[in-house]
Length: 87
Image (cartoon, rainbow, N blue to C red):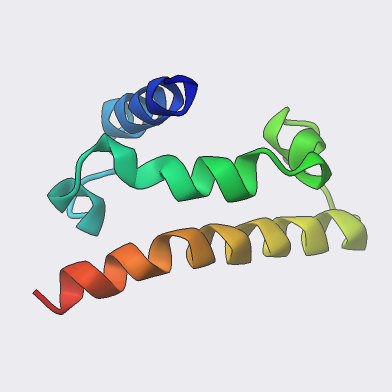
């Protein structure tokens, strides 16, 4: 139940800022975000990043953290992208 609630909030947040325009995610329901929330957002290593403490930084460690976050996000959504592209 909590995961569904978080997925719904994330979906509406992305939509409200126009981040879903022309996105493969529009073809899916809000539960498409479950894997991202379970595997990426809950990682303690991303706590500072998600709290906004690593927004503008030239620190190499922060840049590596951001790259890791991007890669984990890509990994979470890639199966959905592949599924949509092949239909």
